[in-house]
Amino acid sequence: MPHIDVELEKLKTKLLEMWDLVEYQLQSGREAMLQADQELAQQIIKRDRKVNQFDVKIDRMCENFFALFTPVAVDLRMVLAVLKINANLERIGDTAEGIARFAKKLDGPVSEPLLEMTKVVPMYEEAVAMFADCRVAFKTNDPVLAKTLIKRDRALDKIYRKSDGIVTKFMAENPEKISEALAVLSIIKKVERVGDQVTNIAEEIIFYREAKVVKHRQDKKKKKD
Image (tube, rainbow, N blue to C red; front, side, top):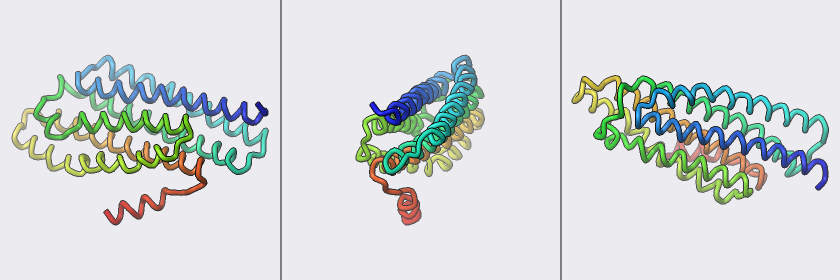
């Protein structure tokens, strides 16, 4: 392999390692929420430092790549995409940490009626599935799969838009569970952000593979919706 391809492969490998760590953080956040697992939540918070270390390392690898080579066309788009995907992975890691902090505020497992009313569990599971599929799209250079993720984000947005009213009604009927309901509402907002961040990554995969910028097109569609 030419030296430039070797270095590109190293970049991709390092990014996928970070991806795995952030995916673990996200999945663990779900368990911490459902079980009110204080110890697991604390582990997620501590591991965020490792995510940040990956972020810095990958940024430096990209800087060194630009210093050593003069990438053009698809190679240039690849490195630019890695930089932006890296930033979004770091933000998702921060989001997972935020979920863990709200999970720590729970005194016990979330009540079943609240889980069912808010649909936070299927919402969370879809966000984790989108994140995993986005990794596949990046690893296999699949812009078609990336495009499906942008559409799937709408389901998360729909649950999020209804959550304020549902939680407000639940708190009025269950005043003893106000703190629990507010923690769940905060987690829903965090999960919605994960959907947005996965969408950002999917857009970078499309840019890298097809040289198409889809970000502003999606913004226009959201305004119409």
